[in-house]
Image (cartoon, rainbow over all chains, first blue to last red; front, side, top):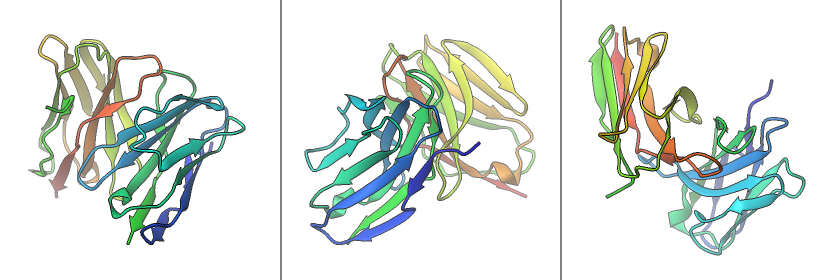
Length: 113
Length: 111
């Protein structure tokens, strides 16, 4: 079956602009996670959804970052007033439930000029 | 000190060598331990999943967890050029807590 998909695969934007990154989890997976991976680093947790609600958003770096999952499937990560330091690969993962194996998408490479 | 420490390498070995990759951690609550493989410009893919202490073997891969030392290892036997990738250790204390990753070790297997 289809894995986790993310769009766009690459996004180049200018400092101060708004961006949206989309994640389509594996069908039927109730848990969805966003991570950010900077160059030469491991993924760092941003936010976790169980169903439609954000169960843990403790990893969001500041209030410029926001994520939604209105119907419990597709999720969108939104970044306002982008900064050059936001440049990274944004990874999405889904699992069949809390504590179950997380399957990752290919990531969205965001470059803020 | 970061919660999970992993030597970033790079590590270069000849084809057929045994590779040893390691991570140390500081949080004694971690109970679930994973190794992910990440090819260039791809997302991480799960290789091994271990609960608590002990060994787990899957083909050419063996994962070891020593909770008393807070130390985990991944061994790759008969390494192949196709094993060239970044290997990430990850761990959690279970339930709905997020994974905590190491930096990743970049491995090159030379034919």
